[in-house]
Length: 257
Ligand SMILES: Nc1ncnc2c1ncn2[C@@H]1O[C@H](COP(=O)(O)OP(=O)(O)O)[C@@H](O)[C@H]1O
Ligand SMILES: [Mg+2]
Image (tube, rainbow, N blue to C red):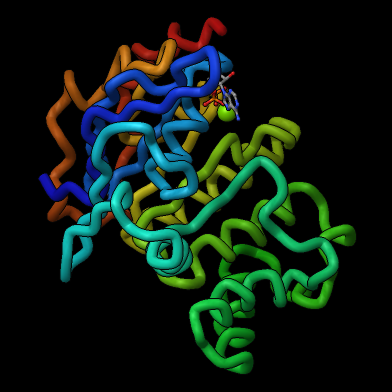
């Protein structure tokens, strides 16, 4: 077991509600993990705390890199935003991309913000766009792309920096079902082929069933975790050979939301 992200006793309050209630959670390197649960159960809050976007009111969050164990809950703002830029990638339902920039510029910007020169950034961005099926569309602005193509740009941007962990919050929520499947294929394959860890919040049973592990939240608590009933994946196996966990079919009943 090779823990990359570890949260202990995570608690987050909002006025009048508790969004996360003493959550313990560990993601292993290379795992794809679906986070499911009814609306308002704390999925987005958990993702944002684990990604260093929101600060928890209590609890510890640790990111293990080969060189160190970093405590996200105690890092200062500047160090935290640098860590987010360098170690994490984000794919949201919409947003996070800049509509006035081209597809190429949106992806290259992630590298330029980390100090890579423009020419190198644009070359790498073009490689990622091509790998995700967007060759020839580099110079289009986002308004000139379909919803599925925009999400591919977001998937390229999330990974171009070499992010160790990719966070996705309902990444196919705004897409029709055929396009959702395509985008999900691209996300799962590219993340696995590059050995990254994926945490994906979803309402879609198809998304969850294709992840190695499913974690279910209710009222700010983890109420089911498929990793608790199945052997942890062998972290020495290549991530690209990760197979969907057929036992996740048992969790499909959890989608009655
Ligand atoms: N910015 C906020 N201000 C106040 N309450 C919030 C805020 N964000 C989330 N909440 C509350 O926290 C709980 C969890 O929300 P959220 O994490 O967005 O759930 P989910 O993503 O599962 O729908 C809900 O009760 C929600 O109303
Ligand atoms: Mg949400």
